Length: 301
Image 1 (cartoon, rainbow, N blue to C red):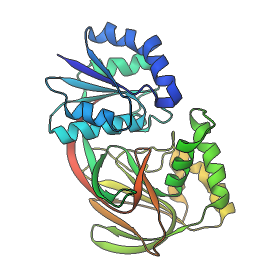
Image 2 (cartoon, rainbow, N blue to C red; image 1 turned 180 degrees about the vertical axis):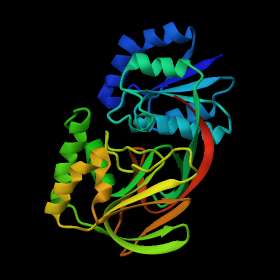
Image 3 (tube, helix red, strand yellow; image 1 turned 135 degrees about the vertical axis):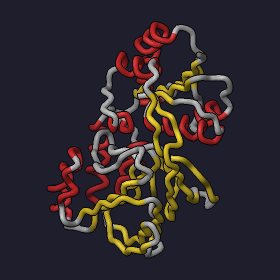
Image 4 (cartoon, rainbow, N blue to C red; image 1 turned 90 degrees about the vertical axis):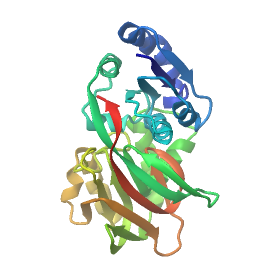
């Protein structure tokens, strides 16, 4: 069986390249034997590499959640029924957390070398990019709008390059100081609901932001997305409750809601520009239309 490994050398501020050469490559050769490798050079490269891949029995993403997202998009666009494997070296690796896969390269390589396949749902997202052009993108993990996207944008632009949860927390504290809630219109399965939220997340997976269990009820093969919103509260109260999100306990807070849906739309209700992120990448502003493609992708776990 031919295997294609797609490596994002810039993931985790360059850690992906060094770890691939020093640790992952030898493990892959041990478990897979011969395989093909391709390195990305710019955003979007992994989409094209995966889209144009032919004759492969598996495609493996080596990078963060953004790299995995690109590989997933490439496979979905190609229409090929190719299983996707994950070797997470980014700052998040959040989708793999839903399956309890540890941040251990030996374990991850053994999983992609095996034949245990999970039929995962994929979220189809319709949106406008920053240039106003209508676009479609697939999400495998979580889509976040509002405060989370603001934090992600700051984190991605930061000149201080640190890794892991500290990256998110530093950006969180800066954005928290100036944060305001967003006036939004949320449509869930045809029912319109006005909301005033700090953030709204749409989960296929449970985790985002480097380990936050934002959508604890999300199940990646149930044909539904998990909609979670943190509604307006005082900043002091928000700061007090926010740590609960790491264990999914924020859902017990009265101003937090969570509901399953087959389809969702979200708009800015007051004309304010609201950014969103897909699997950790900022790609546009609201409005969004999100639907579920049930069991559309084979994932090696």
